[in-house]
Length: 257
Image (cartoon, rainbow, N blue to C red; front, side, top):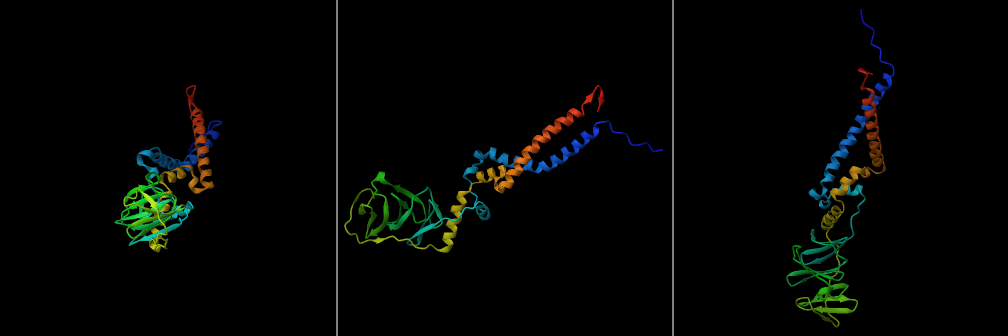
């Protein structure tokens, strides 16, 4: 003869229902918890991993962030190109360290490439190595609007007129009606423009910023922030219901409710 099913103690239905919802909510929140934990671990060690120095150059990510291609200005010097994208300079597609004002020209001077940006003269090798930067502290007149060569001499055009540079580029004297070949901008090859633009855009977005946006949900826009907020509320509900279930199932007077 079969025994009838055991009757649940009075009031136990609410505990069972709460336990079921507790499990369901925990499963739903588990993925968000794992996501936050994983990104959080990397962010805690951001300095050790130098995440703020690691650039993300993935094209679709840059498009997602709305980072547009930069305006590119270029000057041809022999077989090389001196290119500016934003505040960055390149010799061909090799970046020059530092940030600079508007590129106003570049010429071949002896065995070096001399580029002018604002009140600075940049001495570069043909392969893009930055050899020296000369500014107003070195006697360079500025700001410089253009640069040229006249024979073996370097000449610049400023608001105060045209000036010749000494051989060591540390002394300047006024030039009267210099007959110089002034450097002029020219359209860079399409492939070079693409490589420079790709590198420049990649420097804007760092891995640290990407992880921060993923961790906070901002990467996915307003919906991502809402999901993270709901996950935070879910954590609180899980803690509260877990404590309540533990208290409700504690033995009382030697018996389990």
